[in-house]
Amino acid sequence: MKLRDWTAAAVFLASLGLPFQAAHAGTACESEAVLKYLPPLPRGCQTQRIQATGALTFGVVQSAGRIARKAWQRQVVFFFGERYQDWEKAACKKELCVRATFAGSRRCTYSAFPCASDIDPEALAALNTRQIAPDEARGSQPAAAPMIWERQPPAREANRGQQPDAPRIEEPRNATKEARDSEPLTTAEIKEIQEFLRKAGYRVWADGVPGDRTEQAFARWQRKQGLAVSGPLSRASLEALRRSYAPGGGRHSR
Image (cartoon, rainbow, N blue to C red):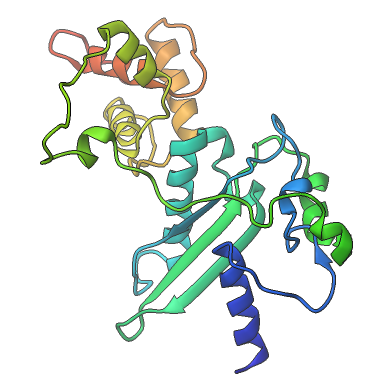
């Protein structure tokens, strides 16, 4: 096995949270006690490593890396919100791309700790440059950072087709709505917002991945409607667009 193959294997094992003993001291990102060195919130990083694998591709429309990066961003937005979705601001990034079954096809897996968009770049760079002695690395921190593999299906989907063990107790309607409003937007809901904005004449991609362009377009739409700019996208944003495009609600472009 070639040296680069050993390196790829080490990266992959580390991304899975499996032990890989190094013969020498490494950086903070390579340390078993990596959580100890992550910059703290609110301007730091989450302590759960997000891993996502992209779909198989032949690289004609999009590269395997780009597809995996988008999959990673969707996971981050679901669990932590848009503030942490920037791959360039992520900590301890690991990328593994392999040849897939079909000739010429590839599939990539991206793994990293999501960090705030306003994180200090120097603190982020220090994770990859600070050398950690083996004794210091062991410390008292967890041996492996917890990792989120993929989005969990909503309870109603997970239990579909199964008979309930006990009578269902309905929550008060207002409590259920408040709980849902506090959850991050799903990919389908973000895409619906983007489609409404495109109908209104704004140049955004309806790909279900939020970003500055989408938020800026929605803010311009709000000002056009005489509404106060509400900030980050939420379900209230989606409801406002739905009301505007409902029959009799009025449709306004830029």
